[in-house]
Image (cartoon, rainbow, N blue to C red):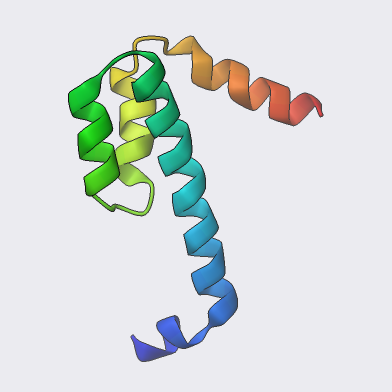
Length: 75
């Protein structure tokens, strides 16, 4: 297990993955005025798992995530 944490590239990848999903989910929760989700997403650190679940299941505008990835793929 210590070999896993000795790899700085892997840790950096996990950090960027987590920040990306957390930022996206926090932005969506704030925009949808979902205060409790915002607080839970801000406090709980799950390496993006809770954030992805929120975006796919609980965000008010579910088509947002599809549009977001469509824009990324096109560029």
